[in-house]
Every structure is written in C-alpha cells, then in structure tokens.
Image (cartoon, rainbow, N blue to C red; front, side, top):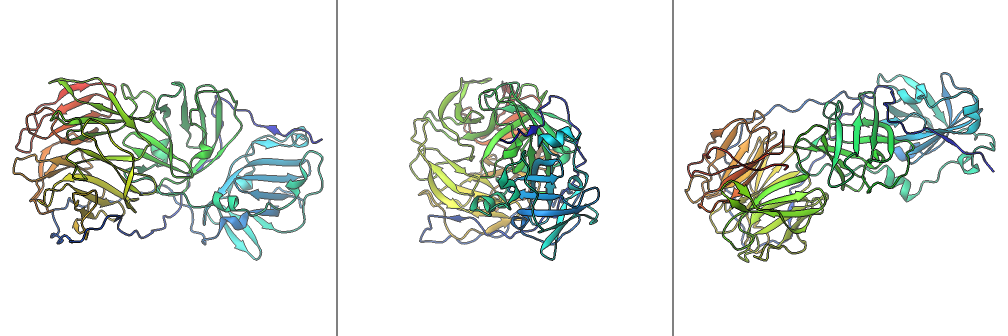
Length: 567
C-alpha cells in the first residue's frame, strides 16, 4: 500500500506567494444584435439617431502578458520530461485537467494549474509524497514553474516562458518516471483526453450584462464578506502577491489566483481545507472562472456561468443583502408603484409606501434565480405589470404579472442578450405599447426594441444613439408631464441628466438635473406616492440607506426623504 500524500494545511495567516501581476491582451469578438423570438407582421419604421452623451475614455487595463501564439491548452495534457535549471535529468511533469504532478528522485509533488490559448498558470505545490517531505522539500513555489506565464510549441513539445519571453523549461515526450511505492501507478501514464478534460479548458461564459470586470486594484486590500444569509463569519481575501485566503465561517481554505485579461477572467487554485459543515457558504475559488462588480458588490461566476457568491467589503456599514432594486408600476391593483428587491437568499420582496416617509414591511412574492431583473410595466397586454429577466446565457424571459402581486413562471421571449444592458423605457414610440432600449457594451451603441403589446417585439431594432460606454441609463417615466417617456443618466462624475422623449423613439438634448449621484444605486420609472408623478428611489452604497426623491413634474425632484435602512 502506498503511503499517504502530505498536504499543505490551511492557515488563517497569509501565505506569501510570488507576484502575479499578470494579464493578457483581450481578443475582440464581434457580437450580433440580440433577437426576439416573437416577430410581428408589421415592421416599425426606424427613427433617426437621437441624442448621445459625450464619449468617455476607455478604461485602462492592468499589466499584460507578453504576446504568444494562440495554442490549444488541451495539447499540454500529457506526461513530459522536463529540462529546466535546477532540475535533474530524470524529472517529469504530468499535466492533467487542473492538476499537475512533478516527479523528482524523491517522489512527486502535486499542485494546480490552468491555461488558455496564451496564458499559463501554475500554483505552488499543495501536496507531496512522503519521501520528498523526508528529503527536506517544502510547499514553496517551484521557481521555473512559478515564473511561467505562457507557453510556445517547440517541435512535438513545448517551452514554458516568463513574462519577458525567456525560456524557463522545455517539455518533451521521453519515457516515464520509474515505479514508486509512494505514488499510484496511473500517475506514470499520460492522462487520457476525455470530454471532461476538453470541457475544463473551454472558454468561460462572458460576464453577465451589467457587471464590471474585476481588476487587481478592485480585488486586493479588502476583506470580502459573503452576503445572502450564510454564516456571517464567511469571508474571502485576495493578496497582491497572487495568494488568497478565505473561510466559510468554520473551515479555512486558501490558494492562488491570477487575473488573465481585462474581461474579469480568473485562473485559480485551491489547497486543502478542513471540512466542518457550515451552511454551504460558497468560498472555494476553485469554482470561479469570472469575477465582476455590481456597484460595490463582488460577484463570482462559476464555470457554467452562474453566480455562486456575492461579497461586500468588510466595514460596509448598513449594507443589506438586496442585490437588485427596481421600481415597478402597479403590481397589486392599488394604483401605486412598488419597490422590488432581489435578495441574496433567492427571494423577491415587494415594498410599498406605508406613509409619506416609511416603506411597508416586505412581502415575499416569488423566487429569484439570480437572473438580471427588469420592470417594463405591462409587456403582454394583460393590463398587469410584468417582470422581464435575462439569464447568464443571454436568454430573455417574461414573467407575467397576475394583478394581485404575483408573477408567473418563465416564458422565453428572446436570446442573444449577453453583452447588452437592457433599459425598460416605457412607451417611447407613442403606439401605446411599452418598449425596451439596449446598450451594446462593446460599442456603446443604443438600440430600440419596440414592444408589440403581446409579449414580444416589433422588427427592425434601429440604433437610436451611440457613445454610451461608462454611463448608467435609467427609464424614468414621464418626468416633465408632456406625455412622453423620458430617460435619466448618471455619468462617470456622478452628474444626473434627463433626456426628454419626443414620443417617436428619439430624445431631446440632455439637461442636467442633479449631481452627486455616483454613490447611489437608482430605482426609477414608477409613481410610489400616488400623485401621478414619476419618482426616484436611491440607495446610498456607502451605508445602505434608502431615500425617496419625489418627482415635481418639471424634470426635477424634491429634497430626499429617508424611507429605509439596511438595503
């Protein structure tokens, strides 16, 4: 029987690793317009291009890896003889999907690795056979493996290179390690290329629309607290040296991480952890392929493109676990709009105004599966307010309202919405049907998707603006009482602008109606107070306080009224 493999123990203290300030040039991928599944017989005549905000400077990227040829990372999966400084002739590296074994004379080491078409990432060992431990080896990084950031083909093998393009190791197919009583025999064989292996290296689904890609500066220097009803002691911390540490509230876990590109793509490794049951708090970064931000909230995405954890910085006083806030026209039949809160525990809660200065108690009315939520009003012509959702695959669904505060199950009405920000805009075209606007994230182009009043869209989908990168755009209802739906926008400086609608899908020149809005999460587009005027609700992201800004009917708003805390 083989002796057990020694594993690195989890620690509550930081375990320094090598510097991982890495990245890769982003490969531009063209996108087609999202499509609606319900196509009407009568097309809408495309309006002229409308008002557009001033162009914004493109965000700067973090440090990039030196360019390398595009390769298939599956081709790295094999058993390789290693030629590298400091290694004996009989050294082999076995690369399987997500794990490696490095064979030396004493036995073998284990660790995690990953790669895409350019970037190579290998973590420090987290296990070794007993003989290597007896020989004095530790779990410190293997220098040539730790410094490798890319790989290039050489004949029938590969060379690993550092960020300057210098060769660190040559990998060739040449024999196999000798039998070792401390290592299983299958480790001496090349891994099989299975569908599961190919799936491991598949490019992750892009970040859902509305999430900002994470950067090193955004991730490091903070302790991230898991929200959503889990153990309150659960946390995660990223270090600038490429290590991470976390806990689900009971168990310690750690490993290494690397940002691969400017789109939020992550490579991660995970060491051993203790295994006390702790309310299933999702902490292990080994399930993370993408990281993005929804305001100040860190959102981690798994290989299937689904969210499995949202985090806020420790010390974010008063911030609750409401991940999305939106205003909906009347869902209950009382003539008033409602505030909808998507909660981290998977519930959808509804609030109305109990008094001029206080919200009602929350009323849970449905489930939330972490899709992006939108409140378009009556979308299917039933006379009741509905909800629209978009999932991580870009599929759009209608959840029809019943007029009594409830909503139905998903009914798919579109696809291809990944990479677009959706704005339920009210009736922009004057035909009595509510419409949607969509911003293409990669170009800033603004498109009109006119509703057909039956749960779908009118074709074509004309472009009505451009240059909207870096702007938050909100459907505001009729702010100036001219009978046309208007828009609000918050620019990168926190200035609030109104775009008055003309009733034909285009907008008038912007008018500034406020400033200092950069720290607020806004919910717009409904009358909460019953005076017939569209209002705004704003959550202060610094402390979670909720404020009501009553519309005045002239495009401006009354002084804020505090209506809630802990949001």
